[in-house]
Length: 349
Image (cartoon, rainbow, N blue to C red):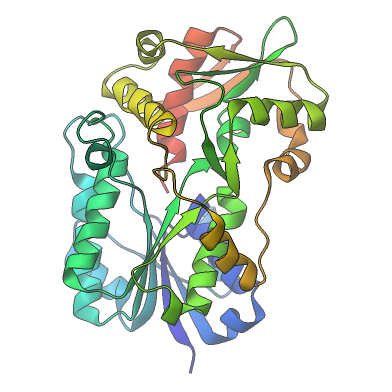
């Protein structure tokens, strides 16, 4: 009889990738029956999963009774939590994570795989203390360890889709594509194709459960500097590029509310001490390779998504305060503000 693996965020980038990877793995697809958890089982993405034989269930992360139903008879669980973007002082992500962990402990889940991050405040000794979407994930990880739930932690990092779907690289009126950051051009960004590769780390862990208890898998194909990001962008697309170093106060002014400080410190953390605090990626990459998976390089991602960098200007569509707004602009100030509203929506899964 197949074991049940329950996947939170089933219709999102991370959970969706986990489901696709298991379905396409001849061994894991026989070993596990997939149950997908989503907030809305009626949306097209959830219905499409149901047609593939995925058991779809809804769950309220604030309700342990709801979570008990979602985790019933689960052998393994993939958990991704959602930040309360732009809401200062909210601990919703921490509460949601702890609720799932409590129910997983109660239900006797044998393997919890959590999408985690480092604790920025602790890692920097308080120098950077306004990055709750990192810190709350790290606190959920600590809670999992404190309860003794058998677990593996996948620390997924800077999404390659930030450059394509969100537009961190944009084309100016002079035809040059610009990348602007509040950190130097030699800062090391650990890049991952989240929609293609997150599931590979999870699947590798499922294949090697006995070898990964308590382990942090570092989810990135390689460390890329802005210099390398732009060099390879030029090689693949043939477009000219430039890097712009933005001072912290100007960068923060692009983004309204508490999210400005959060995103500034998020990027300062990349420069020092680094998203993974200087750790090597090799052990995690070896685990994935031994499970017969190949991670996507930045060049490969660009080749597969060249069409997303073909438009002449910036076209942004977003939902803001319940209304649809369409913006076409090459203005950096306006674009960055829109950009981070989109970022908040994109990371909802």
